[in-house]
Image (cartoon, rainbow, N blue to C red; front, side):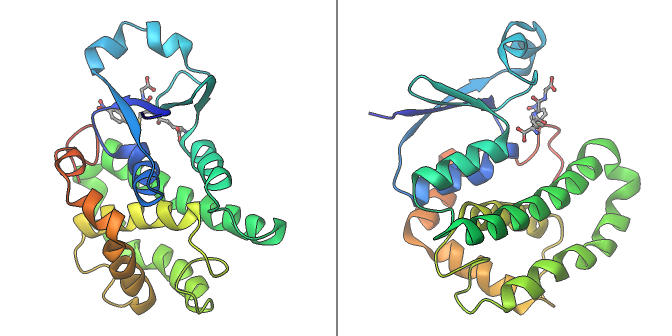
Length: 208
Ligand code: GTB
């Protein structure tokens, strides 16, 4: 019986990383898919703390904000570092992932036709920071010797970048190895090859 519920639009979007994390952690969850026309009626929006989806429920705990949800799951499932110092570094890297995600989302939703080429041209200037940081950590994860919620978030974002530009990791051996290693984790492999994942578009406007 699933104790978690994700309420979101029928896309990967802001829930891609949390779904991959839940799958990898062997957790079950229920999905409530919100139709955009239904959303526009406003009742559900009014019940969201910031007027936006996703909503994540764990029993009587209700959360909004995808990064808060990832941190909560990281904390609950041992994917938030071994101490407060690692946790701080994990938060730092996750903030870096979110900065790149926001750039990506701006391009996808606001300037796909005019900004895609420039975004791809500039992408190495964002990816090189993750490459350099991860290369210093011999475990193959961002921080410490265990997977963290920021690794799941980075992995999800890198999968999206690879859809946009299949060669974008060719000059980043550490990140390329990271994607290969994450994709091969048995539960992640099963999840990303499942219909539940494959049938979902990455973004709400169908652009990728
Ligand atoms: N900081 C928040 C977080 O990380 O959770 C940002 C959440 C957010 O941007 N939510 C968007 C939303 O609720 C959905 S993700 N938008 C509706 C609104 O603001 O009224 C982007 C998105 C937009 C549309 C679709 N779609 O139509 O299927 C899917 C995803």
